[in-house]
Each structure stands twice: as structure tokens, then as C-alpha cells.
Image 1 (cartoon, rainbow, N blue to C red):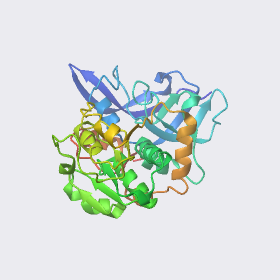
Image 2 (image 1 turned 135 degrees about the horizontal axis):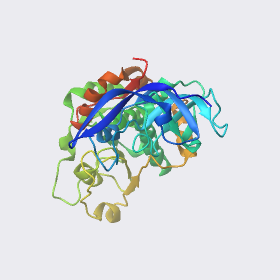
Image 3 (image 1 turned 90 degrees about the vertical axis):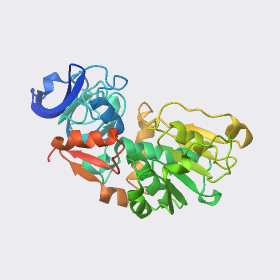
Length: 332
């Protein structure tokens, strides 16, 4: 077994109801129990990390706490022998970064059942370019495909298209031959979304509240990353038999709609969870991204930051100002 090792982590503390993250020196002896100790080289920033860092008790119950729901790196201890010491692994979801110390620290200790072997040809940085956001986008697209979605059926909408999930969904759907309509509240990102493959970019007013219970069908299928009112309006515009993969709640967790899209047009609302799903389901999507689903533009445009930049980047998530993929590189 490896002796106790000191390492750096970006840790959030609570003081008089306020939450502040700072770089601290910790010891591997302070990490929770688990079968696998991993030296983390890269993590990936997500909206849930921003919530954890802001003290959201629905995400992280106790503080001080190290966020980071994604991590990739090298196994340095393995009580079960699988994964093997020296192997590269990916850990996303489950309780990592929520109430288990996460990838914003240089070491994590987790159950072996949380670890996915690094796909052939990938490294930790590439894996974290996708991270939970990419995994979620892949799962959303996979659900549409499973329901029979094809490019010939018509346009596919992606709401919250400038975000970490939406941007990967745009590129992946375009890569698969779909006519993608990106919906984003960030007008200045229109050209970057077109560069990812969107054939049209609409503002968030495309999903503004309309009191009519149904609207003219505009999209064959859709990926919704925002929830709330925009999702309700999107459902009104799906063609008969179409599907919407739903994975986010940045616009709110409430969904006020009618049953009409479902009983008059046979629309399917598909929930997508990327956290507690079986490890095999995660492995299948990672293997696709490492193969035919490779998103070259997303990989090329991802931004790397160091721990000193985490507070600024996480605040941007909370303000709705973040875009694209942001990677934490512990070597910076």
C-alpha cells in the first residue's frame, strides 16, 4: 500500500453561511474509504460542480468538501486488483464530487465499481474533454437513435446548445448526418455553433412562453439540456412520433405542460441519467466517442485551466455565462 501522500486540492469551506473555495494541502489519509486510490491528472467542469461549490445542499450535504464530479488518472492502489495498479481510468458520476471528495483534488479514493478503463487511444485529458457533459450528450443522442430517430425525419433541435452538454450534442448529431437547429441564449456564439455543425441557430425566444397548448410542428426530435419552461415549449413543437431527450434543469426543475403533445402527437419524453447508470452503459458511450463518435471540433476547442482559475469558471456556470468544454489540468 502507498504511504500517506500530501497533495493539492481545491476545497470549499463554509463560514457563517458563506462558501469559499481555496487551494489547500491535504493527505491521502483524509480521503474516504474505498478500494481504489487514483492520482488524478485531469477533471472536467460541470454545472453540478458549480452548485456544490456554492453550498447547494441538494448536491453536497457537508463541508469542507472537494468538488469535481469527473476525474481521470492513474491507479496507484487497488485492493481488488481490478482496475490494476498503473492503469488509466475514468470516474464520473455516482457520488464523486458530491459527498465523496472529487476530481478537484490530485487524489481520489473510490469503489472499484465506479472505475471505467481508459479506452484505447485516449488519455486523461481527452477523456475529460468529454467528461459527464459529453457522456450525457452521448446518452441523449443514443436514446434518440434507440427510438428510431433518423436524419430523414427532419430537423433536430438542441436547447442550451452553447453549454457543455449542448455543444457536444450539436457536433455529434451533425456528425451523424442530422440537420441540427441550435437554440441558445448567447447570440455571440452563433458562429461557433455553426462551426460545430448546426445549420441554423435560434435565440432562446424560439422557446418563449406561448399560452397555446400546441404549436406548429417544427422539429422531428430534440435534445433538451435546460428543462423548465423551454422544455414545455419544445414539446409543443415536436412532430408526431418524435422524441425529446431531457437531461438538464438550468431553467428550472418544474415542468408545466399538458398531456396534449403525448396523446395527440405521440411525442416521447426520454429522461437521461448519466450518474447512477450501470458502468457498462458508460463504457459503451466512451468507446463510441473514442471511435466513430469522435468530436474533433470539441476536442480542439476545449479550454484548460488550473486550480487557481476554478472560482471564476464555476461562477460563470452559475451566471449562465459558461460555454463549451473546460478542463481542469492539475499540472497547470
